[in-house]
Image 1: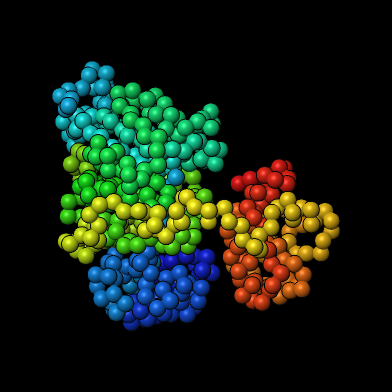
Image 2: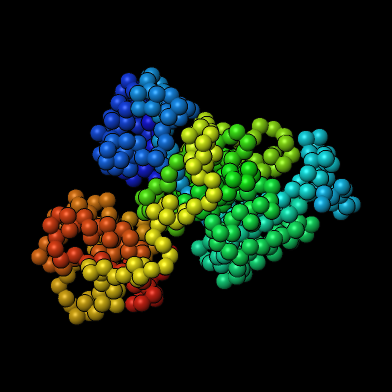
Length: 91
Length: 385
């Protein structure tokens, strides 16, 4: 099981969960399990073509998956996957 | 124009700095000879301006064109109740001058744009981004990369914040982290999503800390690391940031070598043009809705806000069905009768109208301006929030 951390702006699409435990051998599999459990998240994280949106970053532990093997990055039990969307608030 | 020494008054004022070897006389003079530009004097800018002034930064530039209103005061502590209606620049400058009259304050009563940003930012050593929208954030980033000035970044949403330092030599920039902004409307602003009042204090002071460290040249700067703060869990996490060699602005072969149109880049409609004033066919004004209610017209008024918003203010005749439940609960509505939907400002109810139309409803209208317009035009006793 890997832990997926869901950021505040996306919790409304995940039944208000801040984290979920999911199974999967790669980032793609874990995110697939996530959007199967919470279908409303799919449109927020992925484009219609199934690519990660460019303002949503995914980190495996503390490393950006773009610098590992992207979707194919292997996930080990106990790993933490963070979804980090851009936020602009400041005033 | 480097200042070679501190006055007697300054030595006393900064004594708790001066007795630490990491700052000392040398460090305090660095602070005094430093200049920082604060873009925005709101949630993040407020604690930044106050603490940086207190710490003895010699020159602080402030960019803001806004005026203080009551909804600012739960977090923008540089402004007070007496300042409502004043220019934020004037209010912030007064507070800073009171904290430390040695600070030279420079006010820019403008919206930072591609036309003025290079000239304004060029006058400062460090730029601190405390704005609230994507176009300005990408603008500030690109300016900092092009001018080779550090961009001390922070952003907040509800209970969460992010902070890092972008655009240092060899370090990543904002575009390395997020190559593109989200489409308009997908990520709510503080005005739409709310923000815990004390949150910008925490994030703003992380930014202030990093600015001071950069000037003093001490410690380990927050470069190549993104700090994530979750106030509810009271947890700080750190993620690695890397410079993207293919970054369009700071990469090895940059394609963005001058400022662009950031409104367009972020998919926002241009300010001018008739489109903004266009009224959609399905819209109905609150005044008209009031007439329909008074006449006893047979229609369904649906409030698509959240239950906690309904408790702040509501229209008695309206039934609450939060936006997320509209499709699921559409069976509670009569397709043959007119449905009028409202929210706070009109944005969410427009989405609800579209959802019902997709489900085959034909008689659906959106109340323009939401309950805010209702308060303005129909019933001023309904509180605005």
